[in-house]
Amino acid sequence: MNIKVQDLGMCSYQDAWDLQKNIQARRIAGNDRDTLLLVEHEPVYTFGKNANQNHLLQHYPENVQIFNIERGGDITYHGPGQLVGYPILDLHNYKKSISWYMRSLEQVIIDTLDIWGLKALRKEGLTGVWVGDEKIAALGVRISRWVTMHGFALNVNTDLQYYDGIIPCGILEYGVTSMENLLKNKINMDDVKQHLVSCFQNKFN
Image (tube, rainbow, N blue to C red; front, side, top):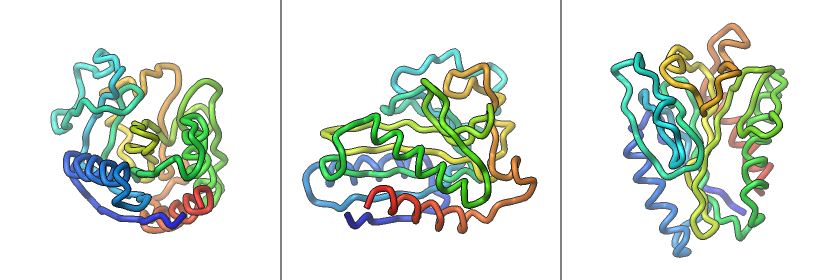
């Protein structure tokens, strides 16, 4: 499979969401290739379709936009310094299994973090990627006629204070971390993108 990679840089959530929907529709119609969108967003909180509205806390920062979207999962945060990936793939070409797809996305992130010497893992019964008891990447997808949209968010140089305004993914008992937090210095985002794309191509080609 030849996956097209499109780096949107810093892009508004609404624009990236509209673009995903357009590409997904074209992919379903057979008029586009499998695509991986990479993006950073201005601060937003997004609620998945089954999210608990009470997981947005009253003291959340005023500069954050809020979106109710059609992916699975609860509330999450997107913002600068976080690498967001939106794969729009026709799973007919891979495996028609949502659990296989989610585990594959987690593996891409685990493989990427390994390059920096970070030992990331899954937690039984939970979606996402963790280092110790702290979550470093969140996942949430929507699949229509076996074509995916939405995806994953990896905390690279993310300002973790924004997570204080929510109960991330509805999980109270664990914290949130970032590559910068764990490695004690700023991480080059272009390096992360390059390695993540390579790990993604290895997993899905």
